[in-house]
Length: 184
Image (cartoon, rainbow, N blue to C red; front, side):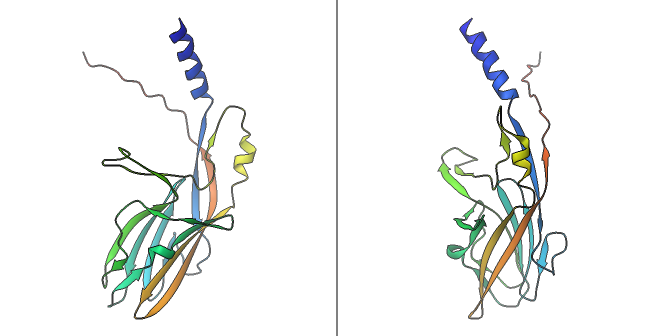
């Protein structure tokens, strides 16, 4: 009986959780079209979700370029936060090469998270409403911005790229119930 009541309470609480997904657009670069920034040194395609930014970077030069990950950051509401790479994009990018990685704000490293362990990432802005939370408060995040700061070194010079991303839309995810059915 206790287990049944506990199960009903957990199901009721779970059904009161509402999840939302954010859509971002690149707003600061006049050269930007469809979240792609391009100049004579690099071509960057950026897509942001609730927790991660995917960065596809092409070195357009005939020289090696290097990303200074020690000084890269994500800036949210005026505060520079440590950037955590999810993938293996190394700092050195050979001439005419394309590299891709996922970047976010790492909360902590968790063993068993992913295949061998990995970071759990923080939402850029709150995307989950619990029972009693006000949806209007979450919708006020539309228009808020995050910046991705990427220092790039090439030929003894440094270029500091700042990619400014703005919340373009927020939509509610539909509740999906997953059941485990046994085959007979």
